[in-house]
Length: 452
Image (cartoon, rainbow, N blue to C red; front, side):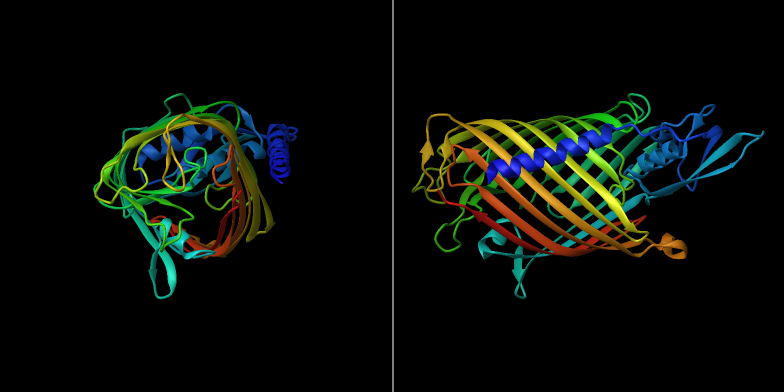
């Protein structure tokens, strides 16, 4: 079963990669652009960033296909809600003036995500941080933030998230030519708790960590290549107090969480990936392909307690895990009608990790380093339909209904408890406008572990 899933995913990713590299035949003719103007942008800095991200220049011929690809790149900017273009007569026969119309986000932005989950075991929803009330497991998280544009290419941003804390950062556009950028950010949290599920390659016990106060620094760089391709690197360092450690499949009544009294948990992550992106929208793609592949690195140092330790005892030792993985993701979208679309995608990651002081499910600790080979794969299909956001109502925002189904598989060799399989599905309503994105969702999650 494992080899079959891996081969199927590898075939899908290879096919989409080959499709993304296929160069379409040039359209006959084209449009010689003599001027480019940006309409609808309220900020002066936006105009320069939009033109740079489009990668269009005056004085040469562009096909309609290339112009649409440029508009799709503009739509993927985080402060652009929508973008379109129009061709107008130029100063002489055969010359055209390109007008790009954009709708920007507001200086202040918000997001709200309300999710109700039904799981195969109630302990899973509790471990993931869902509250329980009114017979439902729910999570309601929100973000409020602001962007400040300074000069032609600089953007400062700040946000407050109900789960994570306070974040501030800076983005420099045009750093490596058209389409390039650099972003740095710092996240500070002073409250409890956010939850993180570790991959089996970092902890084969299928562990959920809840963390509280601490800081996370992140850096990301985008280097434009040819066409819709780019090279992207990212790195982050996090030092936060660990609140508790709980097995995802623990029994609520017999397996209590391990409380760690605020002892330090450190994690470092980095990745370097190639991207090919022709999607027409970052949130609601109706056509196009997004493919990426590259290296993922992860390292974490966490406190662990031996079996028999009380909740008042401090951790006995520190466990350190290091992971190197090759990962690829792909997604393709197709329009079914002007208001409906479907997307199919997946992820495949093959890694090798080393863990010092591995803690087993019964809380015993292996003193010798353990080497693990890991495989993680998933496939997802999504249907999307626009309910609002056409013609005259477009200025008020977009309302979409979505339905998804996702299947995942994760295993390590040697295995400490068996592979983990996941099946999730559910509908959601998503509203987007210049103020932000608001989502209400219901998810059914069937998460299982095959004991060996």
